[in-house]
Image (spheres, rainbow, N blue to C red):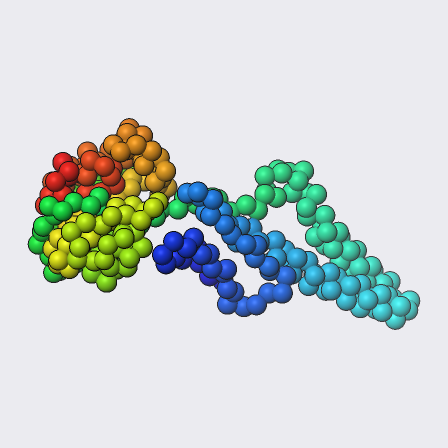
Length: 307
């Protein structure tokens, strides 16, 4: 009934934009508040707005029905004459209609008495997981993936699983099994990336054009594989052999980018119990991990700093 749409990737240096949900059936009392992104947290209350709007809508309908019932019952009472049965039924209907209306109007007070937390129609804050770039490494050279197969592990999620090279799927599922035995999962934000997408990222992040020997990052932008000689074999993600993965616990990502990028070695991220377990499981399955990015894995190794 409610189509929830969240962050839309922005171009260049623009902030991400949020799309307001659209209803399949228009309800006049449902008004969605504006969402916002603060740091790594997405704050929206679309679900709370929807429930509150539905309550107001149903309250209006119920009030109208109750008034009509009182009017009809009053007419039956007046026309009942000497019939005690007819008058009794009319009185009962009026009583029931007024009781139901009072209960509806007092719902807020009733819920506040039972449990005030029931009135906090606040949608959980969501951690924004940006698509991140591999560290620029001029020595990168790999073979291109030609066949793709989505992994089937129940604890594997994320948009990147849809473009998983077939020859990496079995090893990734093996790592997922290790994580599952420890109560963890994985969220794949990025895997294979098209040359066109890589060029868009280069335009956003680098002063030099695609195909150059170095990126020369723009102020405040991350170093990005420059697609040296415009050859997709020279960038980890355009070969399909690189994966950006975050550890999860009970479906929630354990760490966010701000925790991982506080220092060059991502110590805070690597010391996290979930992410640390992910790194060990991936290494056990034959992947290497980029020293400057605790979320970046390769198989086979292409970047010189992937160990």
